[in-house]
Image (cartoon, rainbow, N blue to C red; front, side, top):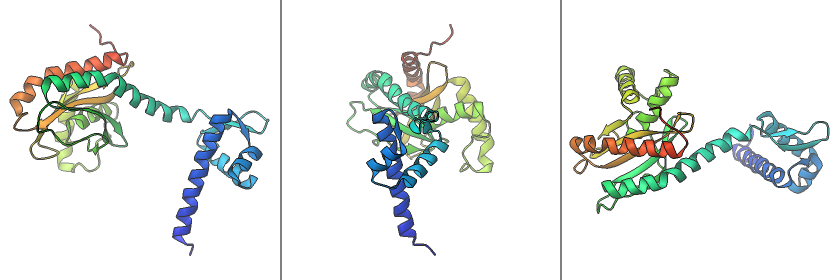
Length: 253
């Protein structure tokens, strides 16, 4: 049997080298196998294998028969995800700050990522007792307000997108709730993720109308009881629409 530790180390080294190849090509514009091998201080066959793996995934491409490589179009969707994340936080920041100051509660922006909701921006209100720092935290889709908004959009496109962790007995109820969320344009989470935590969220759309993020307001249940959640829901929806407008989406009149 092979040494698993050595195998892992070799795998990490290959990943490190592949990233270096991308960085070198990005800096040079184009590069050949010999040039990259020399920069990496490896044999040409090693550089060729790295380029082959990157080319297979569309991350690099050969330039005709010149033996040179340049960055491939496979990087575009990856970069697009990052750019989308940057744009929604950039456009959403002033809206979040204003909403947090007005409502006195924590405001978050979350995006979908591999079946979860990932909080990528946060603004805190002036309340002495605030909720958990959600920035960077990964949360479930099915029992958070942001997750429900994102999941409702996903299920509308693909009915099989329900999370596997949802028990079969609960799947029909969740499907009905998500249909209501999609129709209403907002979602509530009343002590579903954590006891004593309530939240409301609304969708954020890009220029095409696709739901790319969710804007949420959360706080302790004693400050955000159902009556208060109901009262602030229109403001959260309006804030989500304002960020969407900043992202280039205009709702039909």
